[in-house]
Length: 147
Image (cartoon, rainbow, N blue to C red; front, side, top):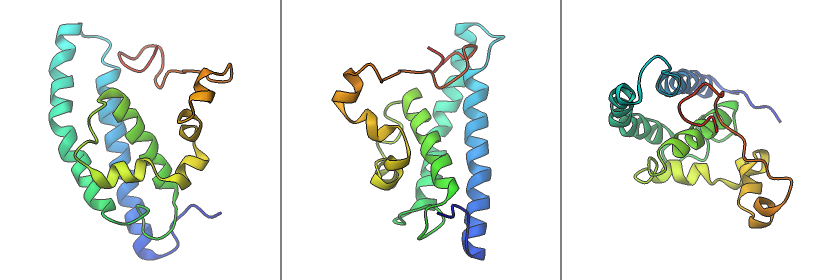
């Protein structure tokens, strides 16, 4: 399976989305790794992040539109990157995708689930088994996702 863009148009979409994903991840990391501030001071950048998050997610959702994959007809590496970021952001703000049908559809796409742990997480049997590990999404220094 080739997970990179195959056409010039797909390459453009792939490059744009990789940059958008990097910005989305960086913004999230700045918030969650704000170690030098108090909990009260943390509220201000977090509130700022939460204020712009819907706009960012709307842009990503519109970029996806009704397409099955972000670059077009073919599954691409950026689909996995965005899948991971959507999951992280949903853990941080559980309702953040409520207004974005395309992103919700994408997040629960069965083909991506084949390649990710979430297909196992949908099984109550797996969650109750000794194989399930509820691991952190961030390093132990982070304010969120580290426990």
